Length: 193
Ligand SMILES: CC(C)(COP(=O)(O)OP(=O)(O)OC[C@H]1O[C@@H](n2cnc3c(N)ncnc32)[C@H](O)[C@@H]1OP(=O)(O)O)[C@@H](O)C(=O)NCCC(=O)NCCS
Image 1 (cartoon, rainbow, N blue to C red):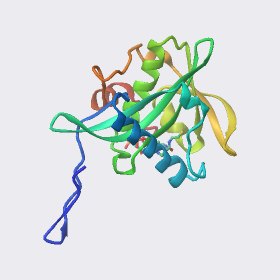
Image 2 (image 1 turned 30 degrees about the vertical axis):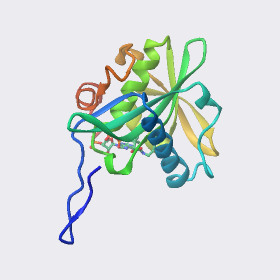
Image 3 (image 1 turned 45 degrees about the vertical axis):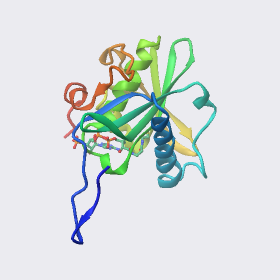
């Protein structure tokens, strides 16, 4: 990330126009993934005292969104995890985007696509997620539908299910990362009027 002042005047921060999403494949990506989760779910949202890591992380697949500089991955700017529960049912969770990269129309979508498509390729026949109520419209735009209301960390959530047909089975490994701009153009429904 390049963010500086020039002769005392702030210079507009650099935003990578290219965003990809993939399974975390290198140690620095895992470090960034857990740091971002802690920043969002413990420090920003206060859902956890110190760490949001739990037993699901022992089996979960960590997926990261990466900014690019000169064609090379630069920084972890988002993350999500997926894990199987039973009989083809998978859960996604801990979806988060760094503040600088929110509402840029790319990062969350890239992560959702990478998460559901990767689970689909690994035998998932039902993909579920517990969604904070304020984010339900956002997930509806990504072809998720409501299943039932649930409580998580003492907060009301909505259990939602992905329309798997919208997510072709495809593992988002490092050699074939999800292109954020492409899936944002192809996958996302327009915002409801
Ligand atoms: C929710 C979150 C993952 C969305 O990711 P993002 O990369 O910022 O979203 P995108 O840029 O892909 O999409 C932005 C679009 O969705 C809309 N949007 C973003 N968050 C939304 C929400 N909570 N409800 C409805 N719309 C939302 C934006 O207004 C924007 O709409 P537009 O394309 O018409 O301008 C991100 O805001 C975030 O990390 N929030 C904090 C953590 C969190 O709440 N995680 C989800 C737990 S269920």
